[in-house]
Image (tube, rainbow, N blue to C red; front, side):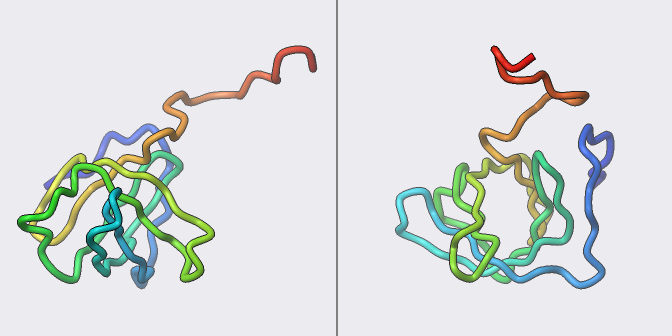
Length: 103
């Protein structure tokens, strides 16, 4: 499966970073690893299948303490590798506009 034509630059990890997926309702938790990541999404490698779980939307917990996390939606599946889009991530590319009243 091709993961090309991205609008955001990706950071590729030589060794995938261990992390955890948690269901939106907190009823399930699965270990995975981040293969690459950008401001708008990531490619994750699952340790076990998510078959039978509602994983259209879930949380990607990036730090062990849970202080860094992203709400995600599933965009592609290729065996145990999945592509996710961060919900709420900016989808525009280019310079940011200053907040109103500051410029």
